[in-house]
Length: 92
Image 1 (cartoon, rainbow, N blue to C red):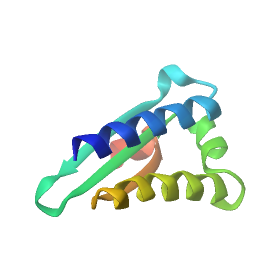
Image 2 (cartoon, rainbow, N blue to C red):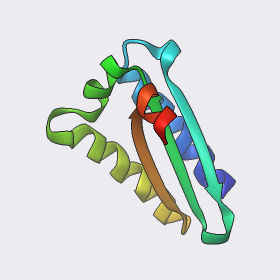
Image 3 (cartoon, rainbow, N blue to C red):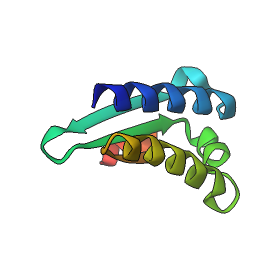
Image 4 (cartoon, rainbow, N blue to C red):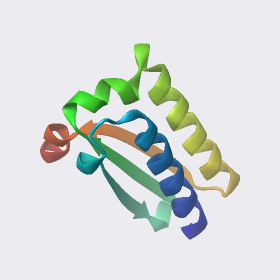
């Protein structure tokens, strides 16, 4: 599971750095659920950067999630990626 977490973490950091204008406000939280072999990633961004990462009609976010899931499937791990603003992350 550590291989999946590290690979997806690096991927999300690389991709998010290409889209965000406020990288100092970007945060990546990782929660592993070992008994179900699931990993949840929360990419928390400044509200102004959310639209850039989600993209038109959610196409960019969909592509980001698809590639992250593909890495997980290779190792038999379910990968979930949430893209949230800081305000939304405080509510959850």
